[in-house]
Length: 632
Image (cartoon, rainbow, N blue to C red):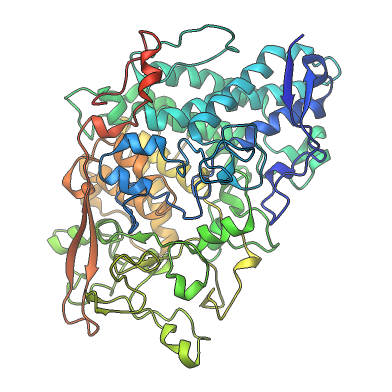
């Protein structure tokens, strides 16, 4: 009789809480034989809960500094961190970094293997002390396989209870494979409990693994409910089921799995003929149909795009303190953690002198803002300056004027009022001072040499930063503890954006599929309309490549600072292009008489070497059939 270490949750659902102190409220670990594990729905669901706890929170599952913007979108003034290693092309350091969410080895003594180490069974309420993405995903796959292999032992459960246990297992088996594949590429699809000696042979293509994951997502869709609160087994945790996987969750990740497999990087399969506009159209069509599944549920009222007025509810604003954000766009997220971590994440884009937290600063790069956050007429700055699409709005001498409303909503720019209650000696912090000429001529919220708590680029970002009645959180307006910011793994805006990308890659901007009555052009204009800017210009719509560029720009704006960017620029096959390698600051004197773009980092990125993380060398030398990623 096999024994499994499982955690029996005293109250199912608390693993999904984002409360300050009680992330897990659980009984001690128990070694139970398989009959006990599957003796009841509650026991089996307790086993499932461990898979939820293994989902990595990118923004919080690192050390105290939230280093999670790994593309061209963020800059941290500490080269010894994972973003610095990625910028330097030193990916071997990334996978051995004790403080990184990829292969988290964080312990009580900064990387120790003690009882708080992430490499042992760990249920600490700190996200950073749970297993990292690679280790955690392998554990999750194993747990899913145990459930699938033993589901017939659930003789004391109803068919509906067995179905939801099995549906979650199929979902997580696919999901955890996808988590590894996003960063390491093609990976063996493990569909059984591995015992004794075994060999895992790497498949030839990403596509063949994605198709196996697709079959699991299809099974999950058949078995999972639309809404746990409407099911008898969900009554035990009524009102606490928001974070549980559902039919809509499975549709969304099924589509994402297929779109990633269809993307130019995966389609080229590391070959020299990569073309950023070339997708696998068959997989794109399959992805569209999958996304149509959740969009139909949205039409039925299960999900809804946030309005411009209530958009903050997706990121941090909730009516009940310490409850799930996400509002009507919520599809899936990792569980929350310690309140201190949450606050560090929420404040990571803003100068420490203003918010008073201990987190370091992640500054949005000027290049990311300049190329993506365009003008109030809906055009990019480049297209606006070209004059090809109407009168020009952008004035290089007044770069903050006439911009896309989302530019102002999610950024603090020089001169913005950030702390109106700061008085006396602190009154200097009332307005953002982000100018920089030399180290001795910098605004108080702008970097000096080696300063890691101020902006390095001339901007701050505020997507997850509380602002109530027009006033931001600050040391003088302490509102942050009322809220729990969270980066979602999937939200409805992302679904529409991926649907539009897959549909356009297959059928163009103006054709609707048989599965859902919405064009790619129509999908993108949903977000333009929400922000109050013009629809995509008709001359751009008819140019296939130009429209794809515009679609990607819209994705960069809407999903800014949500940790999708590094995956996106790699799967599009553009990470090695100069525009995406250069991290820029925006420098100007206090009187703003001139503006200069200053190069902070020239990223080392060669195709295909720096498109995939390497596997530890010893893992690829155990047996033949598991080759290393190219260049490593």
